[in-house]
Image 1: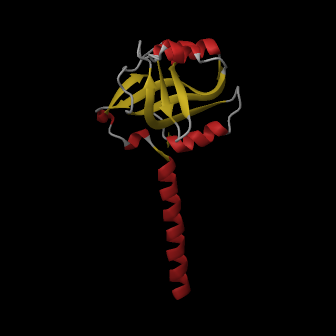
Image 2 (image 1 turned 135 degrees about the vertical axis):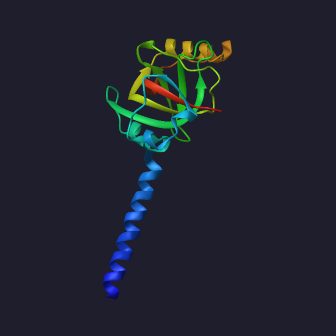
Length: 169
């Protein structure tokens, strides 16, 4: 009888630990209060929304030309100051992804730096040209010296968003 009790106690611990791990990696849009978010673009409906650290791992396994459909939550590091037509979103402590919006069909507010967002769309890896990097730096309000210092293309983690949720302040 004691062995049976210990077996079920151990099994319960293993299952509890496994579910805690899954909670750290993702959640569902159904789990959040939509009244706490502004919606831009299409409706976010994913059953699996990854946290930024889990998305960083997904990007590390992508090669140029690969894409994955994904939804994730993170914070905004930077946003286009001209129109809100792109944003840079934190992945982990070292990486970020450049988020643009499907068919240039919607924009986000220009004052959402450090805000929590949820995006849904396609993650991919691309190489950004010097011209594009300079254009983005100009949109971000960088100085002429900072823009001129951009002399080489850069491997970029990119994201084409179908929709964005921005947490209300």
